[in-house]
Length: 208
Image (cartoon, rainbow, N blue to C red):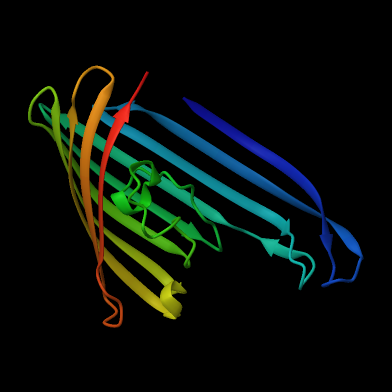
């Protein structure tokens, strides 16, 4: 499945704080997404680019040039699925809340303790993803990733920050409609003033 979108948005932008004077602001968004199987590899990729103007009540119209890009490649070998994921955000782009890269980027699991990728500065993440079906009902999971945030505003650091993430988890199918999961994420910082992050989530998912 592939789609391309070039979208034009027009809104009113205040030229200065409390000025009461507004100018039209125009922005364009290009979004391309693709997924499928190539040479035995499962591939999913997306890129979004925004250009034009955006609202800012203190400066009036300011340039918008945000970029977000994502790639995941996975291979199924018997009961083992091996995946590699990478993403980058630039110039203020902030991702969605459910990126299937690591536990700390995927709010679907309830483990996204770092908030949305890109919120604290331009971010690059590379990750190794492993899933192993121990039985038909029990799946073991593990991720190893590095987050690099440029000029991070996280906890008022205001400099480049690296986070190494270690994930481990399991999911167990109780029956056709219910699944039990337990997931743990550890984030370690290269900044000595920051303590390690620990996130543990146990959940039961029921589909009717």
